[in-house]
Image (cartoon, rainbow, N blue to C red; front, side, top):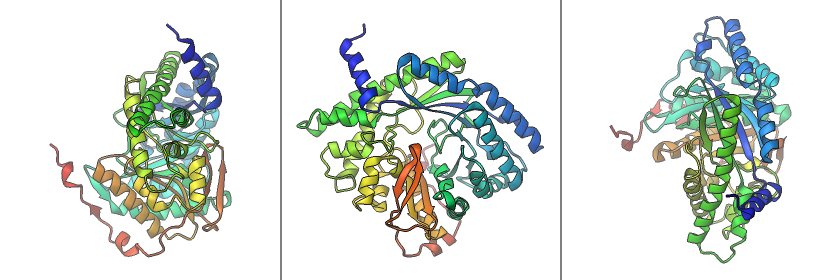
Amino acid sequence: MLNHGDIIETIKMIDEEHLDVRTITMGISLFDSVDRDVKTFCDRIYEKITRLAGNLVETGEDIARTFGVPIINKRVSVTPIALVTPGYSEDDMVEVAKTLERAAITCGINFVGGFSALVHKAATQSDLNLIRSLPRALKETSRVCSSINVATTKAGINLDAVKLMGEIIRECAEATAEADSIGCAKLVVFANVPEDNPFMAGAFHGVGEGECVINVGVSGPGVVSSAIAKHPDADITEIADIVKKTAFKITRMGQMVANEACRRLNVPYGIVDLSLAPTPAVGDSVAHILEEMGLERCGTHGTTACLALLNDAVKKGGTMASSHVGGLSGAFIPVSEDAGMIRAASEGVLTLDKLEAMTAVCSVGLDMIAIPGDTPASTISAIIADEISIGVINNKTTAVRVIPAIGKDVGDTVMFGGLLGEAPIMPVHRESSEKFIGRGGRIPAPIHSLRN
């Protein structure tokens, strides 16, 4: 039976605390579209995406009206493009990206993910051609997102790929310098990448997935922050319980939306990603949750411990609320997309080194961090190597999405708008890592990867 208190509480969560479904993402397999001829392939993927996702936006908006729940983004993810483009040149890869863009515009979706390559052990020529096409592809499209997996716990770290990605990120920054190097905001480098992540820029439709699937990503940092604020004298065990109960409520809403979307679109249900994904809006911040726990400012001593509690409690509460949980699931800490993180970074309390420590206990990594535009490619690669190592050694997903803002330095700000927000330029260490990165090769998998 419906409880009036629960109804009122949910309305308050939506109206005052920024509760929303962050994304409905339709995953689409492109394996049946493979062809040696790039034009034939592009025609096939355009037809398939527009046919399957043609009603995605309309359906999402109708569900939002029916249930009164904001659904912010409607997205598509596809099979990693490097797997379905045999023998394609760099120019061909750019044409594929433009086709994905055209399909996204036709369907009205916010982003399409999957312009991706999996190079955690080595790279094929198709992988390399896709990666080298990224500066052009991300410059000439606005809705296409790319993810490159350079490491797994089982395979170790492909340092050659890490080196290449540092160079490519710089090239992407330079190619989109007139727009605060926004191309880098659509490119993420992973370790242990999940195959069912509905969040951009890392979403793709994994090889273990079916023909078509619906994945939903929920949010709600403001709801969690508000719940904690109501218990100023609670001890830390009680705080963990509050977070669990709140995450359960948030995830149940996501499960409801996922079920309804699947029914209306006649597409199988995949997962709910129960991540707390912040926005630049005041009151919708993961940093503010940590500060409600008792920190004067996110980034001070104790931040990693508070984030560890939050991440674990969100997973525990959310897992009980959904039949299938996947993606990243936990707490995101993207600097440019979180008002509290932006403030802490601007004040110098939140540093790159502290963020790296926090990624050991959260659900993603160094995300949406702007760094000086003159940062060398080798330093970018070393930042990636550090972060990816945390994922490999701890058998978890980690990622890097950094923006070397061309022409800008510490004290400046990049402005992207929308959910991508804005970010202060954060300092990096100036000592060189070039010799280390230049060695190349593969960092061996950790001993605990030998579990057979």
